[in-house]
Amino acid sequence: MSMQKFGTVAIAKAVLVAAGLFLAIPPAFATENADERRDARDTKQDAKQTARKEKVDCKAANQKNNAQCRQDKRDTKQEGRQDSRDVRSGDAPKK
Image 1 (spheres, one colour):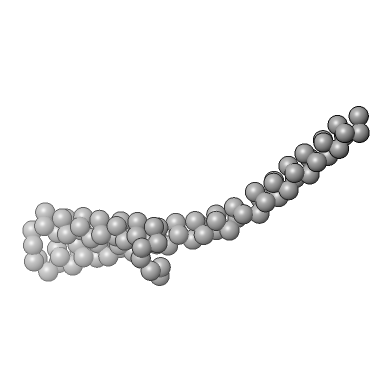
Image 2 (cartoon, rainbow, N blue to C red):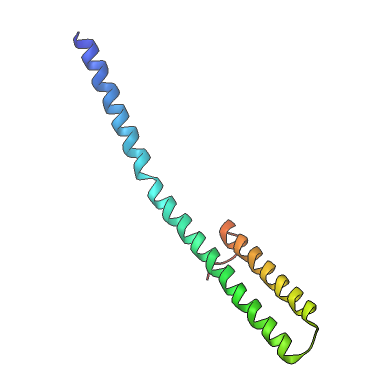
């Protein structure tokens, strides 16, 4: 009977230690992930603002027709998306 009790206590201690280790690690990873997401989102938002401004400037300067200005805006936004992916993957320096 005492061997059963000893085994149960040992298992309970092992489970508590494992749970403690498991709970101690994720918060740092979650914070790092959130920071990366935030930086990537900011990069993408900056690209959108830049694209809007470029389109307005393009139309105001009457340099190109509307379709060409729209394509320039699309290209700028796509570059921003790629920059955002680079930030998220760690390939680009953060702001």
